[in-house]
Length: 255
Ligand SMILES: *[C@@H]1O[C@H](CO)[C@@H](O)[C@H](O)[C@H]1NC(C)=O
Ligand SMILES: *[C@@H]1O[C@H](CO)[C@@H](O)[C@H](O)[C@H]1NC(C)=O
Image (tube, rainbow, N blue to C red; front, side, top):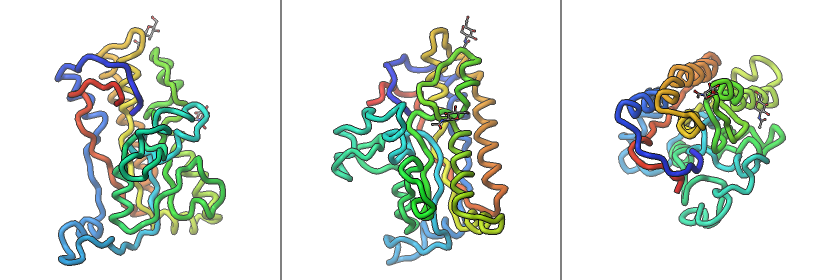
């Protein structure tokens, strides 16, 4: 999500479309990870040992742990200033939150390292413990596609950038196909929200309307599906999806 000017609440029909687009409701949680939720008795609160070594995450500001703060187009944005970060890190971290995000709780629960924001790393050593490719303001659809529909994206990152970055990282971490496979097989892939920004651009474009926003739904679902399918092709990986709250029910002004 990014900050938006106040907008009128959406009609219920659009809401349904939006939800379909944003949710792609599917939680393909690994059985062995799921089993940690209830089991364990007294050990319930300790991080669970897992056979996974790292998390690769994708998404927008609901998952970004520092990329937008570095990306020139968004550096110095509101998330880099107080009160962001005040309740947990006690300083702004680039997260669009006063505290932690779902991804932070997820890696903690799994006992995995905090993934490095992609734009904060350079070397294999920076990325070996997991990478967060999510960027605040990122769209699901490419800026060129949005432009062809009369919309201008203010952040030059879409899901295709994030998946290309992932390929670059994989290349950096593993020289051979076998190594790449081993890395992917020992990683958890987390897809946070993506698509919200596309809908908000559609609604705030000069001639944007509810119908225009709704018309993006199939395209947005297609790019998300494609990104997830490519990841899934690597191996029997475990993928989580962030279940998005119904954004349409509130006026969104970013704060
Ligand atoms: C907005 O209007 C322009 C020019 O009339 C048109 O090219 C574009 O497709 C329209 N955009 C949408 C989102 O309908
Ligand atoms: C994202 O990809 C587009 C090309 O599809 C490129 O023009 C743009 O610079 C990329 N963004 C970043 C931040 O690298």
